[in-house]
Image (tube, rainbow, N blue to C red; front, top):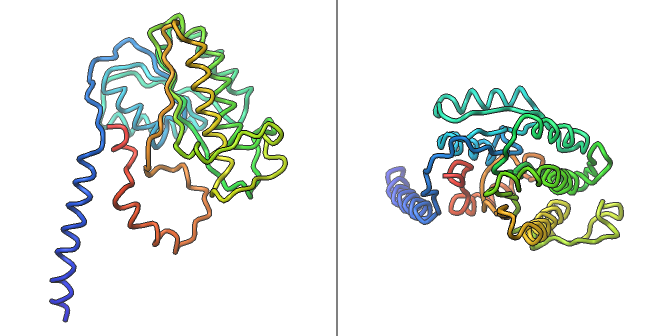
Length: 271
């Protein structure tokens, strides 16, 4: 009986593993390893997930990276972890709390004071919290609209002149195809009337749509300045972004086959 089960399971596991490997082989990979020595990058949310892997990749190419993080202890721990595998590049932790517009302004002032050139701003940090928790930023904005959009919008505009002077330069906005489920309601930007719709987190989707609109308008306004603007979706990947989601155990079980075939790690996204 046991032998029969093993005889069936082993081929199934092998086939599933091969399918997974085939899918991984079709995922895109970075093929540009040109040195970025002397170029300055800012990465928000740099202490974990996609931000950490982005920093690691830039450090490999000898860039100077400003790691914009809320928790300096975690930022320093991340640097120690990266230094175990990457010894090149310059890693510069700087504090910014994206729930506070005052903190964003102070961060921008420090950057402008200490860095004559900025070659890339990567607006990576983000939150996803059930809207039922009704969380707000320190300034009273709905948490997704405030952190995912407003703080990055402010930061980008505060640094834009320096980016122009450092051209060729770029702004990269990490968004999501979930923007397709978003709605910009100017009478409900702060979620004061609540949220409707069937999507799991409408606040998050709305903020991602705001990211895309920001990208389109900024790209239009910077035409001919040497500043390129991009919005990117990292795809279906495993990070700490959805750690606050109230997902039931059985939903994880149902979701497992999809994750197995389609989910990538942060490392695989940033390769």
